[in-house]
Structure formats: structure tokens, C-alpha cells
Amino acid sequence: MQTSIKLNEQLVLVTGGARGLGEHLVRAFLREGAKVVINYLNSAEAAQKLVAEAPERALAVQADVRDAAAVQAMFEQAEAHFGCPVTTVINNALPAFSFNGDARTHADALAWEHLNQQLEGVVGGALHTTQAALGGMRKQGFGRIVNVGTNLFQNPVVPYHDYTAAKAALLSLTRTLSQDLGPDGITVNMVSGGLLRTTDASAATPEAVFDYIAASTPLRRVTTPAEFADATLFFASPWSRSVTGQNLVVDGGLVKN
Image (cartoon, rainbow, N blue to C red; front, side, top):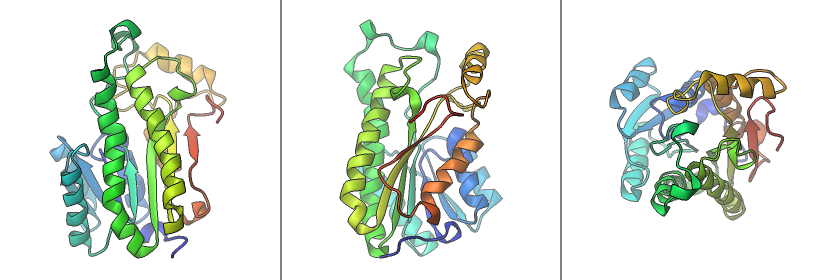
């Protein structure tokens, strides 16, 4: 069993990696010398543009994370391409969602379909990638799984019921998986952001909301996707080799975990 592998020796898979926060996560790992699989659903052009920046260390693969068979095939393609199993999974993919408080689904109109759409993508997707990664991680005696969460389940300043419920379920899965997979040398952690300035999902957020959040943080600014991505590196790095089942909040100190 290996307690750590350097970032530049890892094969990292980022779901939803072609744009938004995912693009910044991909760039962060590429900057550190890792090989990266860029998973995407519809953003083929953006994914290939990222690959072109590091063609020897990046691979774009289309797969719907809600489809277990497609996810398994993606892992097999990644291992065949790079000649080694995936060591690190960043579960970032998000079903279609816009952080627009004015357009959110209110309690009286909330339906199970709204919740289920988020649960299938957020929790189901993370389950499928974890299961597909287990064989290779166990063979290596090493694995890193990092789930992207939210500070909204601690501070639901805007009650996005469906999105927040799915991310809260993902936190629970993070902790139970860490307990189950620890003996295999696999750590499972979460990095939770607040509103990020700016991603595709937060593009609809009014400027006044960004200003309000900035004024409420000790750092007096809104966290950027690049800053969030840098914090995510910690859970894949050797410095986190004894850390699992944790949730790191990266939001400028707005929420204390």
C-alpha cells in the first residue's frame, strides 16, 4: 500500500472538466504535472481545446456520469491511453443548474423530479466514478477521491432545495465511503465552495449578490474558481496522506466548518 504519490505521477479524472469550475480544476492539475482525463457531456470543443494545451498529458472523454456503463468504459479508455489506472477522481460534474435565486424552485412548487435530477447527477455520478475507479486503485494500493460540495448546506442563504439536498447527500457518501475504503489506501474527501466568481452556473447571479457575499467574508472578496481548484490539490497531494472523510470549506471564511 502506498501512502502517497506525487501529483506529477498521478492520473487524474475530472468530471465535468471542460468548462466552468471543471476547467480550472483541470488546469490546476496540469500545472502540477499530472496526467488528466477531461470528462465532458456536451462540451466537446472546449474539452479538445484544453487537451491541445497539454496533448501528451491530457485526454478528453465524453461520458454521462449518470450512466454506469459509460463511466466504466471511460475508465478503461483512460487506462489504455495512459498505460496506468486512474489514481485520482474529482467529482465535479453538475446537472444543468443556474444559481439564480429569482428563478429557483420554491417550496410549494418543489417536486421529487427536481430533487431526483440533482441526486442522479451529483450522487449517482460520484457513485459510478468511485465504483469504476476501485479496481485500479486497489491494485495500486492508492486512491484519491475528491467530491465538490457547497457551503449552502451549512448556510442556505439562498434555499436551492434540490441542489443543496444532493450536495448534502454527497457529503454523507463522502464520509461513509472514507470509512469503507480507508483500509484499501483510498481517501475520500470533499471541498465545498460558496458562490464562485464566476462560472457558467453563477453567471446569472446579480452583481449585488456578489457584493453582499464579499462584504460578509473576512477576506472581503468572493472566491474565484482558480482559488477553489488550488485548495482541491491538497486532498490529492502527499500532504493530505492522513486526511480522509473531511469537508474543507473554501469560501473566504464566510462559513466556519
